[in-house]
Image (cartoon, rainbow, N blue to C red; front, side, top):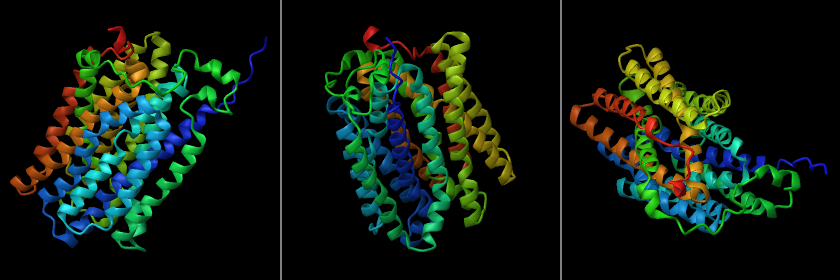
Length: 421
C-alpha cells in the first residue's frame, strides 16, 4: 500500500521556534545596547552595571531546571506560552525602572520568565522531528537567535531616534503577546493529534515519543551520576561565559577601550553575533555531513565541538593582541563563529541523552550556561573597577575557558540515553 506523502506540518514547529528565539534575543540584547544611555542618565558605576547585567543570568540559571522539568511534565504548549507572556511583560516594564534596585529586580524577573524557553523548544523538537532532522533544526534555531541579537543594535539605535529608552522597551515587549496567542492556538504537545499531521508524517517520526506531556518522573539519580551530563554542564559554562560578553559588555568595551563612536559601536557590535549565527548554521550542516561520511554521530559531534572550542580560544587571543579595531573585531567575530559551532552538537546531545526527559536535561545544561551568564558580567564589572578599565584580564579569562571546554568533549557520549548508562 502506498505511503501518504507527508504534510510537513512539523516545519511550522521550527518556524515558531525561530520566531521565539528572535524575540528572546532582541529582548535580552536590547538592554546592553541602551545601557550607555541608561548608565549616563542614572549615574551607574561599572560594578552596578555588571550587577544589572548579571541579574538576568542569575534568574535564568535558577529557573532553567524547573522550566525544563515543567515542559517534561505539562508539555511545551502551556509552558512556552507562559514563558513568552511573562518575559514580554517584564521587557515592557523594564522601561519604567528608575534606579539600581528597580532595574536589578526587573532584570531578575525578566530572566526568570525567559528560563526554560530553549529547553522546551528542544523538548518540542524531540517529539515533532525525526532523529535525522534534530541537529539541523538546532542549527537553524541558534542561527536565528544569534542574528536577532546581532541586528538588535541597529534596531535599538533606530528606535531611540523616535522614542526614549522608556518607550523603547515597551515596544520591544509587544510582539511576544502576539506570538503566545498564535502558538497556543496552533501547537499540540502530541503531533499525532494535530489535524495537519497525516499518516505519512506520523510515519516519519518513527520512534520519537508520542507526546511531550507526562514525563515528570525524571530519574534524578541517573542524571546526576551521568558523566556525559556533568561534562555537558562544564562545557556549556565554558562556552557561555565568553559569549555573554558579546551581549552585555561589548558596546561598553567598544566605546571605552576601542574609542569608537555610537554608530561604529552599532556596526561593529553586529559582528560577533552575526558570525555566531553563521557558525550555528555551518555546524548544523557539518555535524550531519560528518556523521554521514563516517557513519558515527558520536565522532561527528565531538569533532565539531572540539574544533569550535579550540578555534574560539585562538581567535579571541588574537583579537586581544590586535591594536586596530577593525581587525580585532574581525578576529572576535571569528571567535564567535567557532564558539557557535558547539551549539547544535550540545543541544542535539541533550535530546539524545535526555530522551523523553530532554526538557530537564537541556534545562540543566542551560542552567550552567546561565550561571556563567551571571558570573561573566559581574566578574567583568569587578575587574574593570579594580583595574581602572583594563580589559585584558577579563578577555584572557574568556580565552582560557574556551581552552578548558576543548578537553570536555572527548569524554562526552553525546548519543547514549542516560537511562541506558
